[in-house]
Image (cartoon, rainbow, N blue to C red; front, side, top):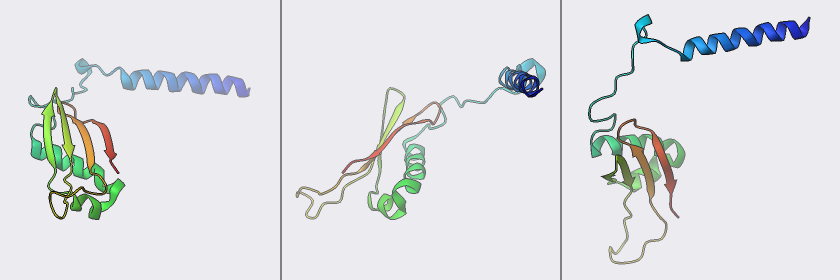
Length: 116
């Protein structure tokens, strides 16, 4: 009896999953809107997204200490990096800065690290 229940439950779950993932616009399920310039259209948005994902990992104090952040777009990917503040400016800096790579089109975080 237990194996019968397992088969029925598995069949129901497979059917429900197939139904949820096979969404047909003709059935009234809307397509996702993708902005013409992507979800991350500007360097200011890229920096805001990068800071939003960095703060929970590296804490606000660390992220704030690396401002201003710089964002460069290459091949549809924003490369956002933090700034090192060396004293005096010509001297070598201990430590490193954060780096986040973000898809311009989807907003997906492709890479995130903090160099030492």
